[in-house]
Length: 90
Length: 217
Image (tube, rainbow over all chains, first blue to last red; front, top):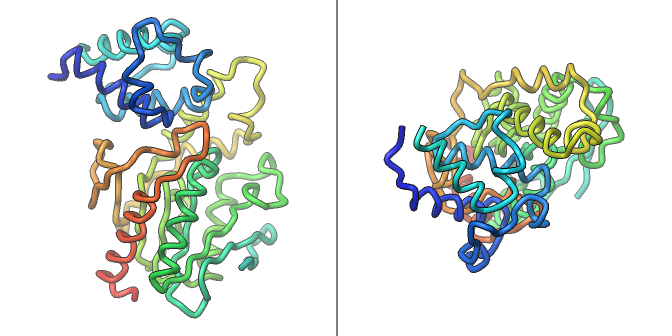
């Protein structure tokens, strides 16, 4: 459904974390696959999770179903990027 | 300056920037938590408008801000009624709404309506429900807001005005249609209230230019 490559999806996920959570560009560029998100970043509280998902939908042109939201996709940067790449690939 | 307006259920506060003898901009803020997150953005924008010779009125909706109402006793229609009363009391030259604030703007109004990053009621309800789900089963209400089921149903059914189209401003990163796109970050997504002087200034400039185009000042 999209011509976004895996690398550009990862870059967009970094931008979304920066903009939606107010993190510095240095901080998001330092994230690796194992970097912790939900439960680790104080900026990512439950209300921010909702906003993060909506922002992912708006910018990547995807729809996230509520039953797809689980710990795996939110607990690490790698998990979130993999989820976004799967959704973009359709 | 603090002032009051009366609606059928009671009395609520209006916060004013600038003197009331200047052309007035009535602001409807984002709803719930987003309101807190955008307070500094909007206050700074209001000061910019004041400097440019406008006065700005920001009314509380029942059950939010300094309101004495307990929100769990209210329906969404109480908000639209109160917004109508605020509009009648303030007699604005332009209405400026933010995010879900677009949903309380009286649909019959002939006043020019400018709106930033407007959101459908159904999407706001989905955000609230997701926040509740992410907060876990021990949480109460919607991210701390004790909303009645009538309120949530009314909000979910609220849509953007379809009659007189508002003038829509969005961030460049937002894919949805808009009359104007401006750079900036969605401060309403952040856990901590942020500020962005450049965005506040860009919003003030947009309102000034558009009001002029409409002949509002």
